[in-house]
Image (cartoon, rainbow, N blue to C red):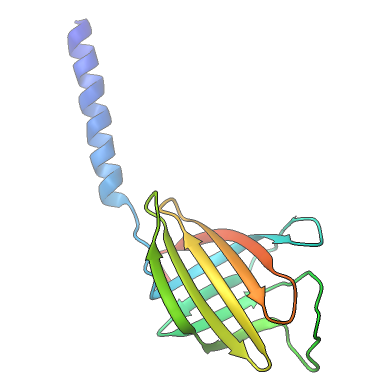
Amino acid sequence: MRKRLSLSVICLWAGMAVLSAQDAKSFDADSFKVAVTYMTPVSYPARMLSYGYSVAMSHDSAFVYLPYMGRVYQPVMNDDGLHFALPAQDVQVKPMENSATRVEFTVRKNPVLYKFTVTAFANGRTDIILIPSNAQSVSYTGYWNEEN
């Protein structure tokens, strides 16, 4: 009886592993959207974000809607902040350990160059590092989904 129960548990566990592997989502580095939920500035406390902030990539264009907190070394007049849709340049995709994917790209919004590093994990979690050419860097955390 004990052997049957152990064998049943092992078969059930193996079947669940196969099903979860089949249901696993895959991150598309060419077309993705990250819902940003957390911000970690360099000079200020980290904070949760309200609904609606995101970073997306589609057809070689970056769609960015993010808050920013940090020191700005060269202010830009009449700037609407980190809310833009511009061509992504120097896009590089690198597979990482633990089924993660890293996408690096830059966006130029004259006169500022923004460097993004997006690391997407298989469980949906995403880490984003933003390095502006005129200000301190800031990190974000969020979740990607396969429906853009």
